[in-house]
Amino acid sequence: MNNNTIVLTGGGTAGHVSLNEAIIPELIKIGYKIHYIGSHDGIERTIIGENFPTIPYHPISNGKLRRYFSMKNFSDPFKVLYGTLQALAILRKVKPSLVFSKGGFVSVPVAIAAKLANIPVVIHESDLTPGLANKIASSFAEHIFTVFEETLKYLPKEKASSIGAIIRPDLLLGNEQIAEQLTGFQANKETIIVMGGSQGSANINEVIKVNIDALTSKFQVIHLCGKGNLDPALTGKSNYIAFEYVTDELPHLLKISNYVISRAGSNSIFEFLELKKPMLLIPLSIHASRGDQVLNAKFFEEKGYALVLEEENLTTTSFMETLGDLVKYKEAIIDKQFNAASSKTPDQFTELLLTYKK
Image 1 (cartoon, rainbow, N blue to C red):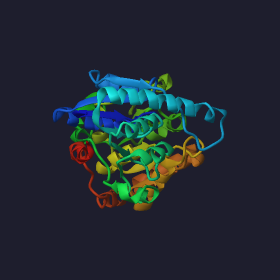
Image 2: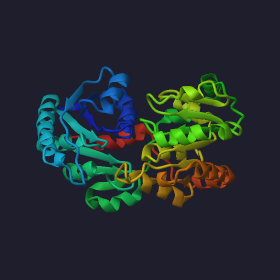
Image 3: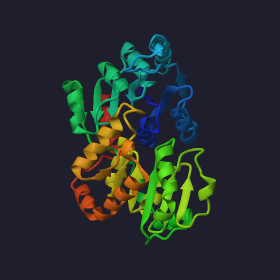
């Protein structure tokens, strides 16, 4: 067993990779060697490959786990079994002292393999209710950390604890001058940043396009539209700028933004909360997901941290009306946000995580 080697896993969406991204520099800084186990073609392979090219990436087979009937339910368990055997071979070769999982279907065979290899597994669950992958993997885990305290009722009490959100420190280092250079905007004018998630959102993109004249007459608009979704019809529009996606630029773009329009992934909305940004959340609908974003959004709405417009009710009119309410209640929302519990930094989480290594 290599006491200074740790295996990370998680994938399927950017949200299942972002915490791993945040703690990798902390682990390297204190002398740990990192290996990553992910899928062959998931977003995690791109993110880790581009941001941490020196970290060994081990692709394995994984099958999707479903709560509904599908013919693939008969074949995918064999993919999970094969992935477990692959992960077991990797773990026996690498001999890590700990496996940390951020969730997603690829993490299940890794968690099972770690249990078989007698390597402790720690899981992080950021949504209000655990995803199916994390619910399965929790049976093999040494400990499960959650963001929401309410999540604990869905997990084994003896090995789960709530630690709040984990926020990247660089998000707090946004610079208005850099934002002005990136956008051509003025920091003293009201600005909206629109985010549809790592892949963008066709519905959100469309409602921005339809309302673009009304929006740009009142606000500067920063639109993160998703890869391949730049609209030539909006290019050069006054008070509007679009990016397919951003990485290091995000803290600066958020710094200049007065309002956020976004999906309701847990990682993102807690970042906006930490930055005290009034939010209009348009959660991914239950028809396109397991409904975790809807629950996250409703929780934030109940706490007074955000306004919510469900996708089924998203129209040209409802969007502008709800945005008007966001502007109207801006100060009240920010006041509520200041009552939220403080977050942890990646280095604080890393220190906590390492207490479980073998």
